[in-house]
Length: 209
View 1 (cartoon, rainbow, N blue to C red):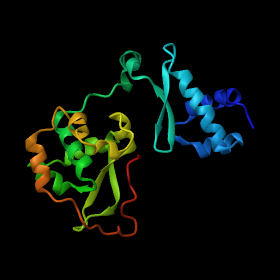
View 2: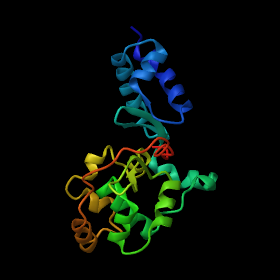
View 3: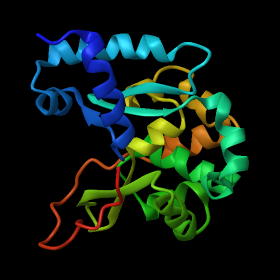
View 4: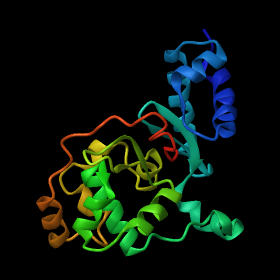
C-alpha cells in the first residue's frame, strides 16, 4: 500500500497534465494502486490546496476530477492572458441557455416558440462556447435536439443537473433573465415525450462535453 504523501505529487502532476476531467479509476490504474488509496490521497491533496497560499483547487464533477484555478484569481489571469477571458454571455444567450437547461433535450423550434424569435444564431454561439451540444438522438419531427454540457455545469458552479433543478437554484443561476414571464412561457411548452434514434451518420458531430 502506498502512503498518501507518496501519491500526492503524482496526482498533482497528472491532474495538471490532463486537459479533461479524469476518474479515480484512471488515476488508480496509472499508479498501480486501489481507488480507495487514490481517494484517500486525493482528499489530503484537496485539503492542502485549500490553504490561502495555493492558487488552484481540485474540482469533482460526478466521477471526474480536475485541477483548476481558484475563482478569486480569474481577473488577474485575464489580464495576463486576455485570450483566455471569455466575454460575458448576452441576455439573449443566457435566456436561450436557461430554456435548454430547463427543457433539455430541446429542439430549436421549441426554443423559438418560447422566445418568440429565431434563435439559431444564439444556439450556435452557445455551441461554439461548448455550453450546449447536440443530443445523440433526434426529436419526433427528426429535429436536432440540444442539451447542456459538463462545461455548462462547471461554468455555473453546479455539481449536477439535479442541483440546478432544486427549488430556487434555476432562478439564482439565471437571475439576469429569469422572470415570471419566462417561467410561464416554459410551462406552456410540454417537454419532448418521444425521440427517434438517428440514422446512420447522424448525431455524430456532438460538441465536446
